[in-house]
Every structure is written in structure tokens, then in C-alpha cells.
Picture 1 (cartoon, one colour):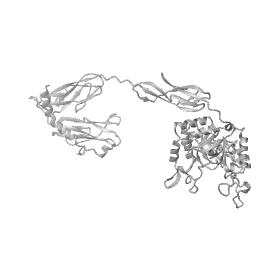
Picture 2: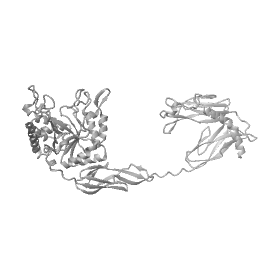
Picture 3: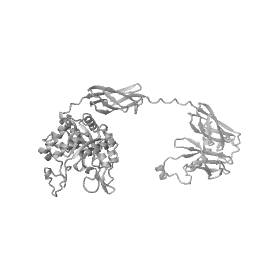
Picture 4: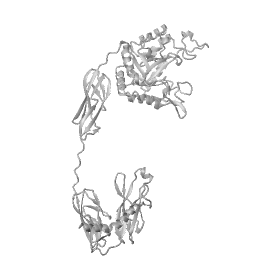
Length: 598
């Protein structure tokens, strides 16, 4: 077929092609194609309807059957019944369209419910009884398996000119719809596409070659295995988290399942290494098939603690740190302190060198965690978590883990006296119900997630805060006695019973500043208690003789003992200094349990 013949054929059918294009530019409701706002902000993808054929040329009185496919968001196709409409000609309920007049028409298939409708364009041309041949373009085409191509057919008159006609399509090696859209099968070979005129007297054939499918590309393979970090330096008994990842043949980092093994300690299936008790150089090995990587581990036994930390049950006071080393502190080897992230590593180092054990209160304080929420001044969990996150650094995590391992840190309390509520004094956490055991428990869990080996707890008397409910994440309770609670032994045993019920430890303490007898002679002077008044009337401080009786009873039942709070004037008086030293000496031969969960 000459180029001049093909050009004249294309020009002859261009009039109907332009009409069809114009119809496509008009929406189903006759609107222009300007993108609506919904197109700029697309709605969620719904199943859509696809009409077959999408466009077709037929002659007057030639029928064509439309069908519908439902196309899911995953590309699956299913036959679908629709209601049919046409802008001209006629279409029955089964999708069979005919027209008696030439023109360009729309066939609309409307889906049900959430299914979108679709539109096909039908070009109806006059019957052409005088054609002498049918011509299919292109003459040949090559497709891959499953490929598609749209063929066109025209009629040839005796003078060589071409006209638009309606045809019936047939095909081998695949399928072809009424609009000439050929879909290749999956078997390679040479096949045919055939167009017949409406009378079935003339035909033309195009050759289709379906090629072999391309070989599948090779999947990336795992080429390298990496274990991080490459080296570790730890104290004996300390822990460290390791992680493994792979690199594939195309250079991508990928997740990989490995089997861990270790010398000089043990390692869990998720890479948590726990150092053994002997110093030396050891290895952690990660294996994935034939690939392996190794982390070198150097373990150092920490220096023996100073003698004062070997004196039995930890014994001390809160808010004592700034006075450590001054006269009057020889009885103490425990300090309960709030300490900020910027100074905690140095605080741990100083405590280790001085033989002092630390009961931390990392977030410390009260006012920094209060906000007006919904018009009510109350505890703000977001502020507390923001503060807690400042401790979540590799340096601090490692320092804390080492200090827990060698006994310098015995625990961390996340909150002080959560039972205090109301809108009165400045120690309140908010209106009733602001704090619950469940809420405090979530704080313990948050801290524990950052420091897995660090015992976490809370400060309040066992009987004062939701006593019928239990903690699940908090591991110890700082339980503070005062004389108004009654017999010290009975009170201690009640606390231990609750701790056993909840699988917790008790760290007993005393309210040394306000926990003595009440001054009831009308003059708040506490003269019969040595003149040591409490913080507010009518409280008196716990007398030295009571300290000697009560503190050993309490301390020997728990994991440590902490009095509230450091008072340099009182502690440096002879009577109180001797009382603390007597208690310290009475505890020297005792060893309490860890403050972690039993």
C-alpha cells in the first residue's frame, strides 16, 4: 500500500475522527473538561466501571453490543450489569445499540451505589455499498504477551479513495472488541486480525506477532551482613542492645533475621546482650545463612565500691546531696535526689567515688509539670514526658545501666505523693481523679522503656492512694511512716502485705520533719521533744529515741530506708547524729533485697 493511498484513506475518515474527539471533550452532562475542585483533591478510590468498546464506528442499522467491566482499585476486572442510556439511536437493557441516522453519539453505562458510570463514543456513518475492498491499518504489529493495540478499518472505493465504514472484527492469538482493540494472549507466535464489512463479502487481514515474554529479572540477593555497634566496652554485668541489618546485591540496606551467639555473657533473640561476671575480650556473632558479622566486646570488672557502701541495707535521706562529705553525713550511704539530664552522668560518677547509693528522681519537682488544661490547673503528662525524654541519650542510658549493674543506683521514683489533690496548697496535682494508680503506672512504664534494667517506683504511703488497686509497671513503693499511723510494726506489715499482693518491693522511710507526736498544749513549741518543731503546727519532728526504735524495724523489712528530709541543723546536733549512727550500725549486718520486682 503506497504512502499516497494511506494518506488519502486517513483524510477520508478524519471528519468522523474529529467529531469523535469533540464528543470526548464534553463531559457526561455536557460540561467542559475544566478540572473540578474534587479532581484537585481526589476522593478515595472507588470501584470504577469500564465500558467495552470504549469507542466504535458503525454504519446505520448496524448493531453493536456494549458490555461493562468493574475495575477494582487493585486492577481486577469483573463483568457487571448496568443501566444503559444513549444520546441518540437506541440501546436496550442488554446493551445492544443501533442508530438509523449518521452522527456522533454517547452511550452511558451507569453503575449502582458507589460504582462510577462510564461513557463510550459511537460514530455512526452511512452505509457504503460501493466499496471494493476493506483496508486494516496497520498491516503488521508486534506485541508482548498481554499487550494491546487498536486497529482501524476503512472502505476502499473504486477510484482508490477511502471512506469510514462499520466492520466486524475477528482475531486469533488473543481477543478483539467491536472498536478494534486487540488484546494479545500469552502464547508467542504469528496471528491475524480480520475486519469484515457489514455484508460479510469483503475483508482485510493484519499480521500480529506475539513475542516471547522477557525473562524475569533476578531478585536482589543478600550480599553482606552488618552487626552494630562494631565494638562495645562494658562493665561486667551491664547490658547493651545490638542490631543487625543486611545489604543486598543492588546496595540497599534491608532488614534481616539473624541468629545471635555470644561469649563472655548471654544475648537474647532480639539482640540484648548481658555481660558476664568476668573481665576480658569477647565476641557477639550474628549469623544469617552463610553470612556473619562480629562485635568485639571488652568487659571490665568495676572497681570494688568504697567500704561505706558495703554496710548493709542502704540508709539515707532525701535532698542530702549538696551536703555530702560534710560533718554529720557519715551515717548515710543513700541519697534520694532530683537530678537533671545535664548533670546525671557526673552525679553517678561522684556517687560511685564517694560510696553513695542513689535513689533517683530524674524528673523531680512539681511546678514544672503543671498546666491549665480545660480551664483547670493540673498535672500535664505531656510536660513530664518531654522532661523524661531529655534523659534518653546513649550516654545517659549507658551510665545508668552501669550504675544499676554495680549497685550505685538502686532505683528511680517517677512521682511524689500522687494522692495529694484539690485546689489548695501548692503540692496538689489537680482536682480529685487527676492522678490514679493507672496513670502513675503508665509513667513507670515510660521510664522503664528507656531504662530497662532500672527499677522504677513511686512515693506515697501504701494506705493513702487507691489501696485496693495495683501497680503493674511500678516496681517499688517509697512508703513513709509517721507516728500518727499507729503501731510501727503493724503498719509495716500492712505495707509488706500489699507489696506481696502486687509483686512489688517496699522502700521504707520516715517523715522525720513532721512525723513525731503532736504538740497539744496550745503552744507550738515541742519542748518535750527537744524543741524541734515540725514544718507547721502542731507537728513535731520524730524524736531521736523513736528513730532508734522505729527505723530498724522498718528498714529490715524493705530494700532500703530513706528519711524525709535532710536538715543540717538537726542532723548535726549530738542527739540526732548519734541516733542516725546507731541506726546505721544496727543495719550493717543486714542485706536487703533489690528494689526491683521480686
